[in-house]
Amino acid sequence: KAGVTQTPRYLIKTRGQQVTLSCSPISGHRSVSWYQQTPGQGLQFLFEYFSETQRNKGNFPGRFSGRQFSNSRSEMNVSTLELGDSALYLCASSLVQGSYEQYFGPGTRLTVT
Amino acid sequence: AQTVTQSQPEMSVQEAETVTLSCTYDTSENNYYLFWYKQPPSRQMILVIRQEAYKQQNATENRFSVNFQKAAKSFSLKISDSQLGDTAMYFCAFMKSGAGSYQLTFGKGTKLSVIP
Image (cartoon, rainbow over the protein chains, first blue to last red):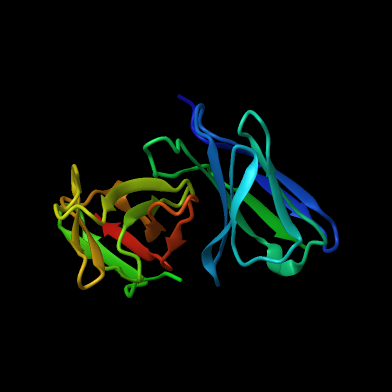
């Protein structure tokens, strides 16, 4: 079974632009969570989607948003990029039914210049 | 809110030796899960081991085992017979049970180097 995939793997954007990252969960997994990883703040929870609904959201500004499609694939969007948004963005999927384990993708490295 | 603390930013161990990584957490929840994740230099986060708080028996996965002390809110990871491939960042993580949402709270990580 294929693992969690994320596209693109690397991205360079300019301040003020917006960006969309994509995540395809493991087949059959219905929950998708997003995390931001930076050297200073470590790993921080952004939001989680299940059945196309956001179930939980971390402490991030409204510039960070996401959505989930009927096939469980998820996208996250960051608008009006700031230098501080430079980070590794990780996506994780969970089966949900009787399982609480999260499996991570390789991440998208976003650099904002 | 939950917090997870890993007090050892860096550790090293000789190949084939045993090493223990520390993790403490703070929560008012009674039901939860604890995890250790490994992130090698290639960046893919890998689940190493998990522990349900309601289980008293410590989890074991091959060379990896945990020492779970619920009263002390401690969750350490022991790696036996360390191998070069164990070189990675190790993150301790907490998840509430039955919250209707899957959200991991991570510690800052411990960078483990296995020395040949």
